[in-house]
Image 1 (spheres, rainbow, N blue to C red):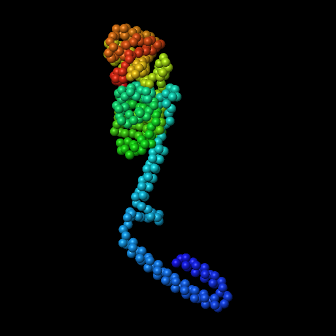
Image 2 (tube, rainbow, N blue to C red):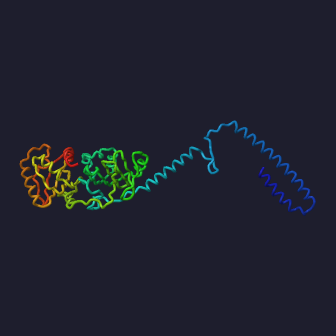
Image 3 (cartoon, rainbow, N blue to C red):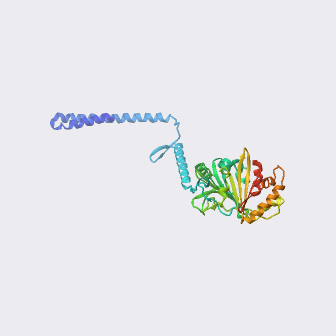
Length: 377
């Protein structure tokens, strides 16, 4: 009908241009408009009848799709709109978590030959470990968090780690910095929905996750992981705001062996006098040694066999000579191949090295090493 109207409109314009041509044109024009009006009225009646038929037909049909509603003048489906809203929410949440994540980029002490570790001062033991090589040994370290399933998963992704173990009176348990390949975004996303974890601002800048249930703090980036545990309700910031702790002089050299290989597990004790006195008493040598530092180095010597090298650092060479003489005498009197403290500390004569005394153990199994760790950790 619309097409017919357009044609008639064009025809009427053409006809009107010839109105000045005579009376016949005027009569034709009148007849045309009367016919056009009649056609329009008939067409409207036909359209009305078709519309009524269509409405009657729709009333007999049942809608098979969900009820629609309008949004911004357009029809939208409830389910699809909800999905789009949910997807947008998740995208925004992940973006916020990733953008708010602030983990300092600290180079690995193993690769950069640095003399500072990103750990707090005041610990009793500091550990440096090649996790890939020393994983069986780390499983023997008496830190209960290392047996946790989450910690095990992180260790599987870790290449290198440094750990500080604190005395109980400090209110802290340990602090860890690790380098590897971690699912940082996934971990942040999961922890954000766990009511036991909350975001805490770090004194060093950025933020970390804290769980009051187990006193554990944690932060991850794609290449680094930081963790800390406390013995009280006070969160232990896993980031070190200060310059960190300096590696003692001579420790880097001590970590290697004659072949130039670096130990996969090394540690030092800051105040070892009490521990050393306890060991000497157990060996039947009730002596108090003024030891300034104790270095411990673990070296693999054969399959599943290790040897431990101890270095006792004294204030001066006089103390070192006196202790070396006593240990030499005790080593000569020691006998037996069974695993005992004597087989660890008196298996070989001590070596005097300036103001240091070096002690090398007999060959030890992983289980033996676990027993030795219990003396220090």
